[in-house]
Image (cartoon, rainbow, N blue to C red; front, top):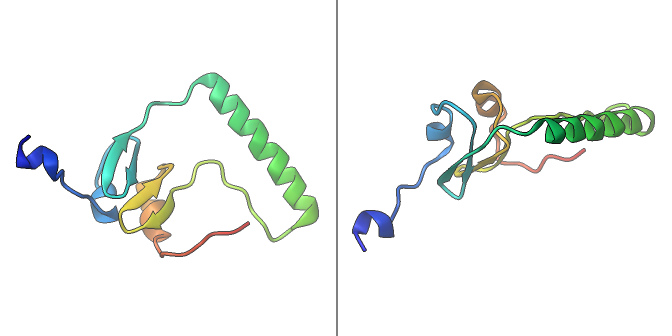
Length: 97
């Protein structure tokens, strides 16, 4: 096994923000994402609507987002959407509803 395969490069959020297309970065390893199916998009839309309506009544200060970069750490970013949003919101922290 070559050294390159044994020790693949590790990427960070700085690298992630320069990539085109839809990617997740998990522990420094990039994963390309396929576009969601129509059925998947409908399900996500319904879940969003139900959560949004429930929170509107129970927790007026809470918000629901459909597609949001969730930055877990410097080398882990999941559910990419807008690179600008990911960069602006990068602060290692726990997000809660």
